Structures are given as structure tokens and as C-alpha cells.
Length: 311
Image 1 (spheres, rainbow, N blue to C red):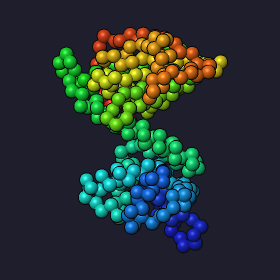
Image 2: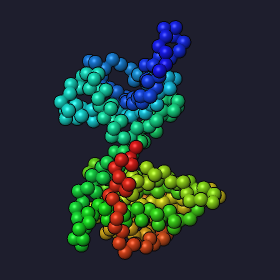
Image 3: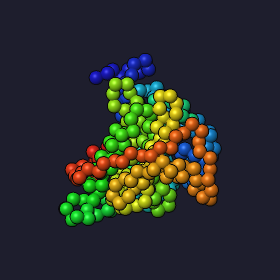
């Protein structure tokens, strides 16, 4: 055991143990959320900019001590609901601490690696939005019931297997290049949108973020399982710098490719007014290839490799 001298030059046993304990810090990323927390008397900050400076200083101090840090997005609405459910006083520092621990357990955190706060926050917001999208889509899947053929398998399982197969076909069919895929299905308040970005690797399969792929497949599966109207758009940037756009719409429980005219009309029509808009310079609008549906796609759980796969 390490010595615990008082000369201040050697770390004490307690300090050594502190390095073994990870920390999670929850941040109020925007001024509106910050303003919502100011109604609590025990919340000691009154300026968002100063708050962020203090938060960045805290992160740097913890990192300098060798502590592993993850950062979560503090949501005042979610916090209020959490306190009501757990019967906690929301105007108490201990309640905020418990909510932060709850966020860490639920996922959607970002590791702190010394990045400036203005670079950390956009990444944190994107991660939290992706987590929320996955949770919402998973809820739609879990409520989708049994398959139509009464095969005894949950429609969610069947739909996720089909969606995962469709994603593999999408990436195999479109060839080389940097791909940006967007899957959108309607939800109660706003479209449910998942984004997947792939980068080519010489002599190897494309670099695909596993978390993005999980969320994309879950959103697509939710659309297939519930029969909601939606679609997939794939934008490919080729090595020569040109962009090519293709699209598919959800049709029943599979994807129907869009023709060149259909994808052109979708991209070159104002969604609000219906008026035509000029096409983007240097962009080709191409007919999408047909994706061959598998005869059956059983055996994969509705959450891919499981709910624990979300960060």
C-alpha cells in the first residue's frame, strides 16, 4: 500500500484510489436549458457563459488527476420527470447528482479527452439526440406486435432482421465512395431521423460506425414494422468530388427504389410550398437499384446485439 505521508509530494492511498473511480459530469448545453434550472434556489449560477467556463475548468482539473470522465447532457425536463418519479426534491444538489448518475447508466455520454467546451458540446448534443432517436424507435418496435403470418415471432425481430439486411445491401450495392445515408419515418411530433456516414478504406470494407448503424437499422425497422411512410436517401461523394443521390421509399415491409425523376422531384421541390427549386450544382440524381428482399430474415433481436450496445 502506498505511504500516506504529509509532505504533499507523494500521492496518498486515497488519491491513488480516486484515480480508479470514473466521473460523469452533466452539462446544460444551451441557454434555454440553463435558464430553466435557474428557478431552483440551490442552482448557484446566473450566467451561462460563466457556467460553461467553470464546467470546462472542472473537466480539466479532473483530467489532470488521471480520472476517466464522461460527459452527459443535462435535460431540465427529463430531470423534473425523474425527480417526480423517484419522489426527489428537484431543488437539491443531491437530486441533481442522482440524475447525473441515472444519465450515465442510461447511456448517451461522451468521453472527455481534453477537447475545448465549444467542440465538446456539439458532439454531446448529437450523441444525446441519437440516443433519444434510438429509444423512441425501439419503443415503436416493441409495440409492433406479432408478425402478420402468426409465425410466433415478434414483428420487431422480423423487421429488425430485414432492416439490417437492407442496410447491408445498400452499402454493397452503391459501390465505392464516401456515403451519407438518411432514414426518415414520421413520428408524433417530428420525423424520426437516423444518419449513417461511411468512409472508404483502401482494400477493406467501408468504415461504419456501429452505433450509427444500430440506430439507422432500428429506425428503418420501426418504419417497416409499423407500416409508416418514410424513406432512405443515400448521397455518395466519389473520389473525383462529384455527388450522386439515390433514394428508396418504405413500401409495405420493404424498400421500393425511386426512379431518377422521382428522386429529382423529391430534392428539387420545396416541401412547404410545392414550388420547384434549382438542383444543386455538381449533383447527379440517379435511379436507385432494386434491393432484393430476402425470403425470410429471422433470428436477429429487435435491438440488434441488444439494448446494451447503445453507449
